Length: 97
Image (cartoon, rainbow, N blue to C red; front, top):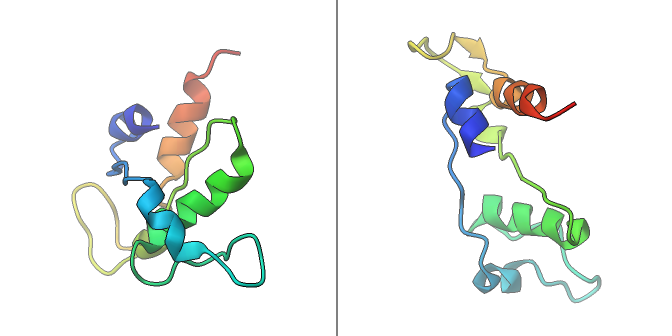
């Protein structure tokens, strides 16, 4: 995923997915809550998905903060960014048929 992002020209990095964060999404009425609160929100969101993925490789793209650009940059236009789409296309087209 990170190699595809780099090739596609989209900025991404791997956040730590450590057991220290597991405490943040525990629930008193369910197995776990779909929120970890403000601290580590993207990380606990990823870990929530990981709880269901089992041994299947998975990624969590936290794109909420990059959905809209107020100004133009050399690597993106102003307006809706579609951040992550180029990376996903690059990843899927690089997989063996």
